[in-house]
Image (cartoon, rainbow, N blue to C red):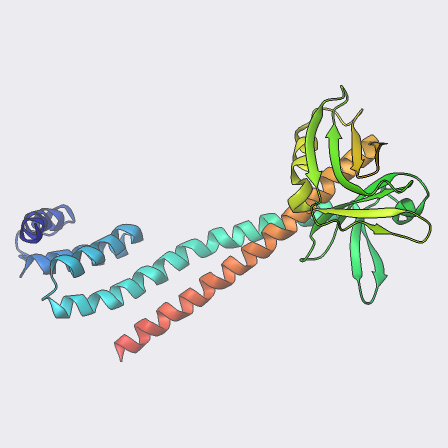
Length: 280
């Protein structure tokens, strides 16, 4: 099978070289040489995926062509360099688009500083920071830090020990459920109980509201171990939930895009160093 595969590849390589523009006067020394030239042409054409596959083929089909196999080390460095240079403009564009989106959404928020220990969070301007401190059932979406980028804080009175929230449609249909399994509810001295649902819990709630054609009539059913309560979502609250989710998502994607861009830069530097070392 090994000899058969090699025979097929050897019969294919001259045709590959001919298609790449090799004239009849430029006769190849060996099929392996043809394959190496095809790698160079693929790199020059910017077809880096094909160039990489041809490198694999050369190393597999011609294990005794040591010089050409060593040459693929430099060719692979060229492939990596070329691919990085091709990807960097798109990465920069993505960063610019996300940065613009963050700026566009940030105009609707203000920073609320809590303390030096706990830091701060961003709150949609239509909402009041003291909203959760009143003695009534209420909720509030917030944009936090990297550890907790987006959340919905729920406050209840009456000691119901909340553990779940359910988004209810204007018609009274259950649309999405967020559940806390850690029993992380906290109870203040005045009896107000607070539970924070993070983005991993309630992302589906924001996505449904984001796609909704209306912002009126929604309620949030809060289920506790000792009872239930319902919180009406005003149009301002629906908008605040969606905007805070969008801002947190944009910030998270922006962070990932920066990391990816830095990785491309490191890859580019590494490949250039490899090429420089080979040239010595």
